[in-house]
Amino acid sequence: MPCPEDPMKLHRPSGTLVDGTDPIFLTPEAAGWTFTGLRVLRLAAGESRTVHTGEFEAFVLPLAGGCTVQVDGHTIELTGRDSVFTRVTDFAYVPRDAELRLTTKSGVEVALPMARCTRRLEPKYGPAEEVPVEVRGAGQATRQVTNFGTPGVWEHADKLNACELITPDGNWSSYPPHKHDEASECEVVNEEIYYFRIADRDGITPSPTGFGMHRTYTADGALDANVAVRDGDVFLVPHGYHGPCIAAPGYPMYYLNVLAGPAAARSMAFCDDPAHGWVRDTWAGQELDPRCPVTDHRGRRDNI
Image (cartoon, rainbow, N blue to C red; front, top):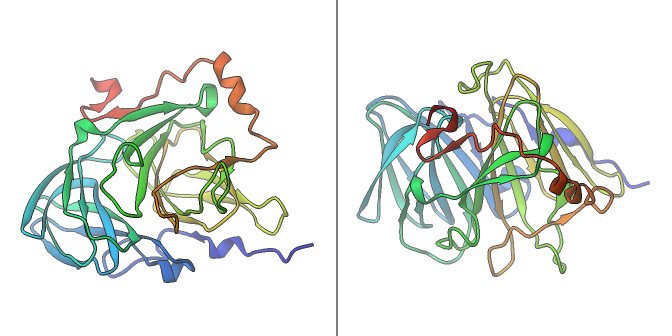
């Protein structure tokens, strides 16, 4: 039997990655890998912050509120949103070796998904109305995938891939379980971060009350993690199959996926667990959950 891995090294509950007033400061070194990182900054109304990107390219992705991004002589205004459950947001790409200045009039919580990279590109604005919203799966596996920073949609990055998901309460996502930990005909190597937000009973306001479930495992049984995740938690996926993510009834689930790896070309290619891949074939005969998509650039679909 292989020596079992400790899943608690991969699950980082809310509050364990804080840096001052910022909820998340996760470097690749702290994660135990090479490429992928995440910061979540919290700025009060009228506050400014300077961030040096160093070896990392990043997206500036408002989670709540809006901000102004100043970098390399560019000024980018991000309208943002009230909550990750209310709208698809605009965003910005910022390069490595840059001094990034963030300012906000009304306060902002902003994610910086990051990847260690070699090429230095120009800053670029991503309009919310150009972000594709995909409904994936069917039945109780219906979910929304917001492809703001994925290959084929956003090509202006060296290593960084990112997308957002919203799983209606009671539904399953990241399913069937899949992996991307070796170079093969169907997958590439990527380190992946899951950053969770869980809505309260109103379906909009992130809250510590609700919860969901996340599973990551390897075929040999060395890793077998089944954890309850709450608002603000992070789960690291260095290898192995991951999925499902399950939103508990009453509590919609959001997560930000951040991926990067050693491949020369950006890719999010994966292989399903062969034990469960057959589930995809059943979706053709099922209806989509009418709650999806939950949002687009105009706001919540139930308000449009």
